[in-house]
Image (cartoon, rainbow, N blue to C red; front, side, top):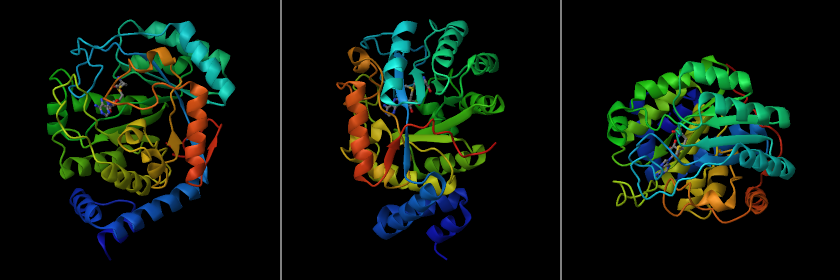
Length: 348
Ligand code: SAM
C-alpha cells in the first residue's frame, strides 16, 4: 500500500509519514489528485454541496502584540489605526443579516480598548439582535475568565490559529513574551468552555520546513478542532519578512485536501490569503476539500487599513458585491453558497 493509500485508509499518519507523503505529493500530480478526490468525497458525505459563508467584521487593527510577520503588529508605526464603534459593528451585522449571513466573525488585533466588559456588551447586543446567528470571536489570547464571560454573553465559536505547532519556528516568528504553550492552552480552554474552536497555521511562513508542517498535522489530529484555517503566508512591506517569498498555492491546496482527510468533518475555509495569491485560489481550495468562505463585511472605508499582508483582495467592494461575487465563484466549481449558520459536525 502506498503512503497516500495508507493515509486515506487510516485518516492519520506519523510525523515521519506526513513528511514523506507531502514530499511525494508535491512531485506527483496523480497523488495530489487522489488526495483531492478523497477530500471531496468526504466533504460531500458530511456537508453535501453546501458552502457556508461567514461575515467577517474586522473591527480593530490596534494590537498590543508584535507577531513579526503581521502588518498590524504593534511595531508597525506606519499602520493607520482604526477601531469600529459598537454602532458600526451592529450596522455591519444588520447589513450582513439582510444579505443572508447567519454567522458573524468579529476579528481584530489584541486591542486593550476592547476590555472584557466592552466585548461582552457587543456580543450581548449581537446575540439579542440576531438570535438566529452564530457569533464567532477572533481576538487572540485571553484568560479563561474572559473567554467564559464572552461565552456566557452569547459567543458560540472562537478562531485562534496556533500559527505553527513547532516550538522552534514559533519562537522565531514571535517575540519572546509569546509562547506556543500559552497559545495551545487558550485553545484547550476555549474547547473546555464549549466553544466551537478553530485552529490553523500559515503555509510557507519564513523558515518553515516540512517537519514543521508535519508537526501541525499531528497537533491538529490531537486537538480535533471544529474548524481549521490555513492560508499562505504573504509578506507585508513593513515587516522584517518583507523580502521573503510567499507560501505556495500548490502546497496550501494539497494541505487543504490532507486536512479534510485527517479531520473529515472539519469546517475548512478557502481563505482570502489563498485568493490573494491566485485569482482562482478560493475555487481551487473548494475543489480540494474546503467548504467555507469568509467574505468581508467591514465598512469599505476601513478595509485597506486591516492590512495583515500586501495586496489583500476584496478591500474595495461593498459587502453585497462581495457576497454576489463569491456565490458565483462557489457555483463555478459545482457547489452552492448557503445562508445556514453552518455549525460544525465535529462532536466533542
Ligand atoms: N489577533 C487575533 C489572533 O492573533 O488570532 C486575530 C487577528 S490575526 C491578524 C489573524 C490571522 O492573520 C493570524 O492568525 C495569522 O495567521 C494571519 N496573518 C497575519 N499576518 C499574516 C501574513 N503576513 N500572511 C498571512 N497571514 C497572516
